[in-house]
Length: 408
Image (cartoon, rainbow, N blue to C red; front, side):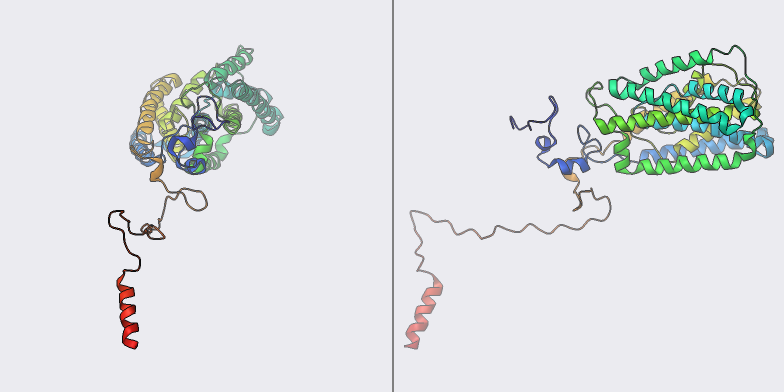
């Protein structure tokens, strides 16, 4: 040990023990990012407030759509709207997962279009036979992307943009729209699809709200120096998120390649990426990673779906670029709010949080501490050299001598 630092500490990285005098095992539970994080725990009230605002706006847009075109919200119109919501929801869930792990995947739009083209071409072989190879290819492509990001430790936006360019090359091999060859109609299962997506989105939000899980999925979030590696666990989590997000995007493409969606155009798919990332930020997911809400994804997907349906009803041309840009603009404001009001309480310190006996930080009932015990054994009276104290000249001994003399 030299200069108060352990010999095995990383150069330029201060040990948790020397920074505050508190054991590292305690700091692991006090900080959301134990290495460089702020003392205290993330606040969640800002996510609740933002989701309440999203719910209010969603209610207004749904009411306006009902007044303008009630058939859109019932019967076949509602089933088609639900399928559109699931397609967008899968892409937003993919974008949100990669954002929460601080490894954004910009290849999700092209991956969805490529999967849609493959399913449209091979749909006559059956949905499972057509979708299987597309999902496997997406998983392998996500694995290559994950290895590039984690092993080389390069920015995920740059690596995924390179991956998107490679997928676009595959898409451009087709010069004309592809008519779906399969007979599966997802509108027949629209209710099951939307319920399944809503359940997964909300459960994932609840699970990610747990402090240990939130810390785990946010370990790849850069601190101090973005080029510094964040450890093996952080790399594994970010890599898994990139793989899963690519597979989710391909799953959205499977729905796009079915018969009900119409011909699949060989477009780049980057407009889907912009729309998905913008909607994910609109949901309250931080662009910096780790922080996010519970119902935000479900509410934001529903809101954007209804807004696009309202634009079509009013006869406007619906551009995913335009809607995505608007969602990105509002979503960046949401990120600033989340990062400002979601971080630990200002002025908190590591000593403000008391660890439980099992090593966790208590966030519920607390037991009142007993008053500190005084020194033991008690300190003896001070002796002064000028006026020494005779140990035999104490009242107890005088009383004893009087008792002895009386007895005689």
